Length: 402
Image 1 (cartoon, rainbow, N blue to C red):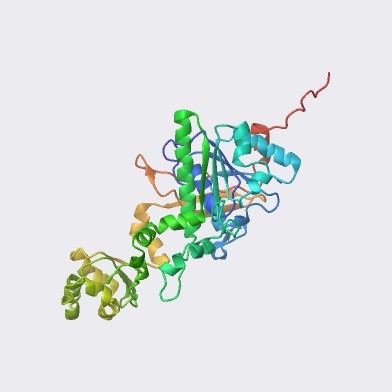
Image 2: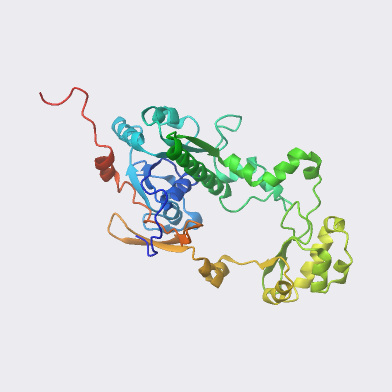
């Protein structure tokens, strides 16, 4: 149950999704479908379950599972099935025959060996929409490398783009997260096509493609004008972007930090009362003197508080913002106003109650926020219900008592 209101009629109400995926990209893609109203049945290994049940972000746990597992599997049902067991595999195949959507993120070839790949499922379920996430696609020299977020960032050169001066990866699972968005996007597009034409289909993406798409600006420039990316201007001590000139950066103040985006250097110099910057009217100098410009700005901003400087810069419509800590963010009126928080409660197998506070789907439909339809499932909690309702064992052909 959720303490938040359920919101409007959900566009995917009535669709059945089988989620074979594990931590993180696949489960979050399926979560997006669940939040939009689909019935998502999570297929997990008995006793162990999704590896995300034990991989704890910041070591945080709630009840039998990690907080991150709760966050990315809310509103789903859990079926425990050993896909190496013939009876369990037959049960799951019967579910696949009825599913509107199948989601998986195994390495290439795994689902085929189980007889649950797209071609096999489509043979008995022609309208199925089948979504797959891999690390690096189904072909090529990286095909069998471990599909993990940091590794995908590294192969895709993202830490190099952020070198400061050493390569610096993004400190959250950005490849997994973006891949989940792309898969959910493709699945909903194919569901729309099926409603219009009756034709199902397959959508495939990868962590690598998500990282390449994220860098479309840089890659477009590199592929169109190779020398433009190769000629990196030295970053300044406060630069926030390899390919943008000063003053774009994060600067210390007397009590925190202030981020400054694209702004004319002379205008900023006048507002901050830095005469040396007022004289830099040639935009080429904002590249060539990036380190000097950033140092002058930082030295000036250190003399007053963040709030004091915001009073000056906001009044002049300078593109800037305070840099919040996580604690400052969640305590701010702006965070409360966006209303992203929901609380979910689950009954554990031992009868204890577990409460998890998490975020919601990050958009609104018809002006309404979409809250989770339930908490994350206890491992295997829905196995018998799903078996009875959707996939009872079949009588052998020609069997029965005469």
